[in-house]
Amino acid sequence: MTDNILTQSLKDITDQEISINKFIGTQNKEDFYKKAAHRRDDHYLFIFQKKGRSTIVIDFKEVELIESMVLCVLPGQIHYGIAADNNTEAWLITLDTNFVEEDYRRIFDDYYFQNTPVALSGLESASLNDCIELMASIAQNRRQLNFMPQVMYSLISTGIGMFASAYRRQENKDASLSRTHLLTQQFKRLLLQQFKTHKTTSAYATLLNITPAYLNDAVKQTTGFTVSFWIQQTIIVEAKRLLYATNASVKEIAWQLGFTDHAYFTRYFSNAEGQPPLQFRHNCRK
Image (cartoon, rainbow, N blue to C red):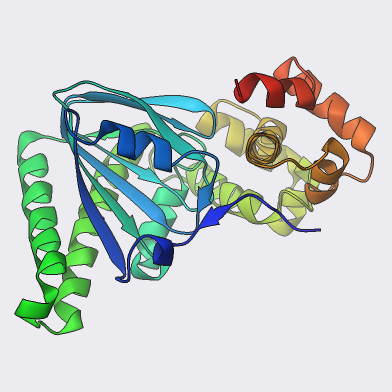
């Protein structure tokens, strides 16, 4: 049995390695909102809002962008727009994972659980806009320009590096790169890879070669929440995605998430969300 959430590939959007679209609140609002629902992407979506106010949903949580901000939507996250004022202008960049350098991926992955937009200064906003406009121009006129592919790759790396720099600056505000912070990063990365298999603090502590108490203390000190909280949140978010975007039964979803007892999974979900899985499906599809 496999995950049957509809996955949109970058190849479904463009024959290039990157798709760059300008969003104007007065022109293409409906386009942006409708095409993103009920699926996940196998690629990154980078949003650079130059001005205005907009709200999108990422994994069932509303995220508001006010004036000049950047936001990264990671592969696998379900997302769609719900509001934008007429003053909103933004760039939407879809990019294959192979073109996001590993160091940048780690930075974006650290915000997987938060989906937090990052505000830009005036100079940062102007610089990023210049870079994206050049990328868009070259992509649009690639046949006439006939540049070597490395030119576009360098520009992509520069643009995504600007997104990563904004996130890294925010990260440095949130927490110093202490031992506990680095350990929390390692735990979260492992969690994203292993949550269907490992569901206890002791399992992750073993993978990290530390005691459960030390891991729990480090994660709680850095995030304010326990290891078990983050394990639960990761499982519940994936369960919500499957309930929302597929017609799989609760039993099938429980099996996909590593639960051998679907009745236990139903209790697990209900305790976390205050409603059983099928009630969540009914409510979120209204």
